[in-house]
Length: 198
Length: 142
Image 1 (cartoon, each protein chain N blue to C red):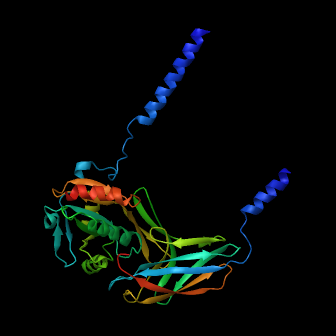
Image 2: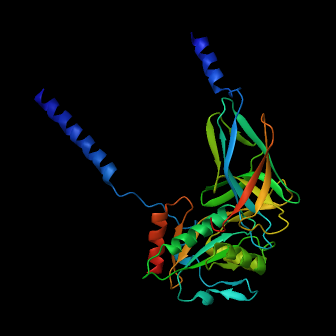
Image 3: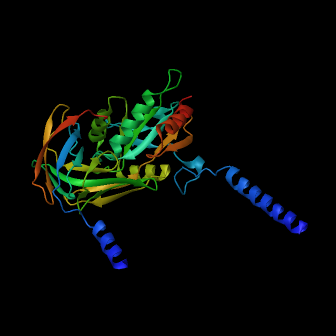
């Protein structure tokens, strides 16, 4: 009888240890970087067209941290919401932080020329760089940054574009640093932005 | 008894057939810049009545067109879809048309909308009479 009781207590202890292990083990961070791209290969040199119609390349922002977002100017909800949030977060940085550049790249170059992206970027009362390019240039940059987009026709005869809603962050050396997802809390997003702005 | 319970459950799951009573508030549309032909409008539709209602359509003054859209973001991709079946407005519930969710998508704007302007939208419903709503144009990055 005594032996059975000891065995039972041992089992209880084992169960408690297993439970404690499960609860206390470090939670695996889910990778936030775009899929199918190795971390270090995201981003890199690019050449697009600025709102003045002149080439805009990674050299134009050399030495500056940046947040890059892909969208389209006829996107009335998610894109202004995301860019407005980035401006708000940039304003929330402290004096010692180096403000990051905000780049907006269209995934709809057929409708969005230099003038369209330039005017769209003016919506935010704070410097946002609107960029476009030839279809080939946009496709190349999308691939480089792991961005998905797809046209979807609507009932008004036009189309909308499904697209990656994640903002990608790069430090001042141009190295990929992380991402900000729309559902992420401002505090978490700000912590990541402080990292590239340090 | 089981049949009675089943009938009660079925009744409870049906829509409430009383009169809806709609209050529309906090309407605004986002300012646009020259050349931009699309924007979004938001509002709160509060159904204070005992009956359920459905927002079946939205119209804007020509040449602009309005559609009820839902934005959603999943798997890192943002999608915008027309809500073909409209928006349910359950009894005694306030539905918010807001950022990143259900909103009125307006396309084909002839000119830019400036802060301080007002645009008119007509909302049509399943049961209630159509409602014309004055929608003030709100600040840019709002």
